[in-house]
Amino acid sequence: MRLTFTGEATYDPVLGAVARETGVDFSILTGRIDRIKDVPYGQLTVAFTGGDVAAALAQLAARGLTVEEVRA
Image (cartoon, rainbow, N blue to C red; front, side):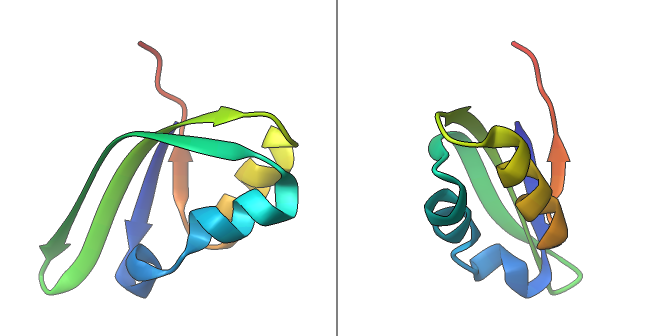
C-alpha cells in the first residue's frame, strides 16, 4: 500500500497508533518526506501483516491519509 501524508500528519506517529489498535504490523518498503509550498508531504510504501487489515485501512483514512493499493 502507498500511504500519503500531508500537513502535520506527516510527523504524527500514525503507524504506531494504528498498529497498536488493530494488531497489524507494518513493514516500510520505501519512504520520503518533502515540502510542497511549505506544507509537509510524505509517502510510504508499506506491507501489512497480521491483525485486522480492513480496520487499519479505515483508521488510516479516518486520520486523513490517502491509501492506495500498489502491485509489484
